[in-house]
Structures are given as C-alpha cells and as structure tokens.
Length: 485
Image (cartoon, rainbow, N blue to C red; front, side, top):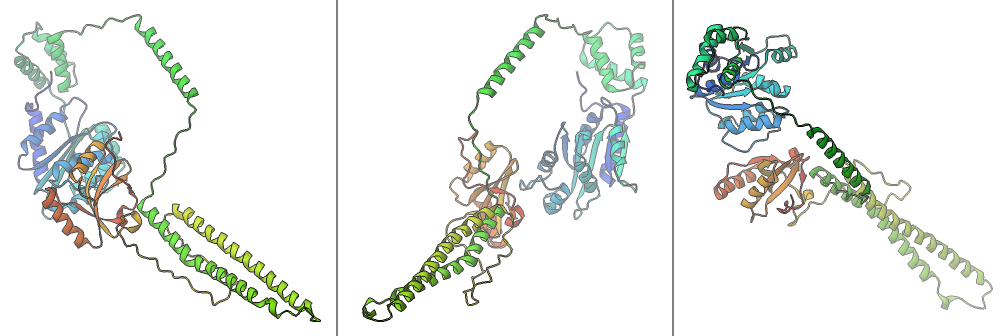
C-alpha cells in the first residue's frame, strides 16, 4: 500500500506552502533534501498540482541517465516547438526559443542525485536566467549527503542554492498517519494500541516506516519461500553447458568478418574534392607540357633525316649518320621524359585520393624549380560544381533540420511522411538520425521553404542549420531501408 499524493501531514503541508512561496517569488535553485522514504516525491507531486498557473515540467531521474535524455524530457514538456537539439545546454536552447515559452515555467527534478553534474550546473544557470520577462524556477530533490558534495565543488562565493529539509515526523504525526491508513483500509487488525505506540516510538520518523509497520500489522510476516535443493546444481550445470557451447562456436567460427567502410563526413568529402582538384590544376599542366616537348622533338628528328638528300658517294657519310644518331638519342631521352610524366600524373591522382582522410585541404604544393620559367602557371581557383547531383561536395550554405531521433522506427515514420519529396536527406550524428531538407544559398531562401513545408505538411517551423555547423554529421548516400533492422 502506498500513500496518496494528495494526502499530506501537517508538517509536510507547511513545507509545501514554503515551496510555493519560493517558486512564485524566489530567484534561487531550491533543493528539497531528506532520507529515502521521508516523502520528498509526495511533496513535489503536490507542489506541481497546486501550481496550476505555472507551466511545470516534472521528471523523475532514472539511474545512469545521460544529459541528453534529461534535457529532452524537460524541453518536450516546456516547448510547443519540437525542433531542438538535446545535445545543446538548456540555457542556450531556451534563449533561442524564448518566444515559445509561457510566462512562468517550473522545472521539477526528483531523485537529482542520479543526474550528471552538467545538468546541475545548467539548473543553477536557469534559476538565475531572465528571458524577456519570462521566469524559470527549478526545484530538485536529493539526499543531504549528495547536496553537501555538490556544494563543496562550487566556488566559495554566494551559491544560489536554497536547501529545504524534510523534517522527521513526531510521535503524534506517526500515530495519526498509522490510524488514517487503518481507517482507509477498512480492515481491523488485532494489534493493541499500546504495542503500536511503542513500535512507532522506536522509528526514525519516516512515513515509509509507518507504512511498513501498518502493512506488517495488516498482513503479518511474509512466508519464506521454500528452498529447492536441486535448483542450484541445475543452474550450475546449465551455465557450464552454455559456456561450453559458446566456446565451441567461437573456436569454430573462422570466417572473416566483413569490414564496414567508413562513411565520409561533409568536411572530409569537401577536403577530398579540394585536394584532388588542386593537384590536377597545379601539376598536370606541367606534365602535359613535357609530353608536348617530347612530341615536338620526335617530329623534328623525323624531318631532319631525309634519305633523298644523302649522297651515297659523299666523302663524309659519317656526318649525316652521327647527326641522325644524336637525334635518335634525343628522341629516346624525350620519350623517357614522357613516360615519367605519365607515371607522375598517375601518382598525382593517387596522392589526391590518399589525402581525402585529412579534414583540411592541402595548403601548398611546390613545383620543381629546375624547369624553364616559361611553363604555364596552373589556375588555383576551384571549379564550382553545377548540376543536378546533390553530393556532399556540392553543398551550398544552409539546410533545414526537420527532426532528430534515435529509433529507426521513428525515422521511418518521418520519411514516410515525406516519401515523394527528393529534397529529404538523412545524416547520422553519433547514435541519432537527423532528417534534413534541401540545400540553400541564403537563409532567406531556406526560411521561405520552411514556411512552405509548414503549410504543406502541417509541421512546426523547421530548424535553420548551416552546413559548416554540422560538418561532423555523416551524410548518408541513400535513405535507410525499412528492411534493415
């Protein structure tokens, strides 16, 4: 049996009135402290029910929760706009979306000792934040020991934290709580009043102890479950069999695992394109010039040896022979230069591809200085990509973020809504899927398209994002298939 959230004892009701006053007129982070079972959750629940004129967000913090999960649970209750990033701190998000907030907001976090310290810091900032006349108050509940450890890590100056302790119940409230529970249960256990009073006096004054004593008087001691002698040996045998089977499967499984190819991010794709185009523009004209010189030398050598002009009775036949031999040697050397040029050109391609893993384009490539100064200078300007292809190397400046989800099922539902729209894209950010729409040159064009999407699909205003701010996202080449689990 548990206490009803609407039922409070006199001392708890007095504490509730103090909390209401602080929430409505204070400007501090209120922390409700007390041992487990003292009634913190009941008091906070009653506080949210009483503050009907304030928009409240109530979150019970689970164990091992992360910051993004807590931010998401709070912002979903406060904001009417679904477009927010739970990786961004709450003060920054609420400053951007202040127009969507009500006049007064109240954030309640129960069991705050499970929160990361990052969320504690954000709550302190929120309690001191002013959003154009809109107030945000924060109330947390935790144990006294954990609050002392948090305060010890804060600076020594004035800390905007107001602790409020849930005091233990006195003997009269313990006895009153016991008999109120007894009257509501509509049962009459055979327990003398003197024994009940004596047992309540031995307790520490926690409401949970009174409830436990009442359940003991109502139901008696729980019957011990019979121990089965064969259960432990059977479990041990089952574990041994499972370990043996698993070891056999690991030993016999010798097939190589396929290596998944790494998806290039937007920054890496741009760096790859810049490096490749820069290497081609800078080095290929030089090697083409070498090949052209080789072709010219070959033409000159062929024209210089004319069999009709050679006199077989001439006294100096060796002069023409030596000249032809020298030209042939020059042709051979020039041909070797052409082969070297071709090989070097292919190496340029390989170098540009290998440099794609760098996040920045090559800064400078120094050309050989032993060649004539009249070589043509390569153009350093990169050619702008034009066409229908919307690969990461041709992205413009802005895009629209429609949603950010973790579950593939939620992603498929969103994609099904935009099934006929080719402007929808999907990117991967850590463990989350991000749905993007379009590629725009200016923010004005993107905002106009966002208004069209609102009227066409009935969604909320999308989030305007710059490609440079989401360069770490893994932009997917194709939309995820529904058949993939």
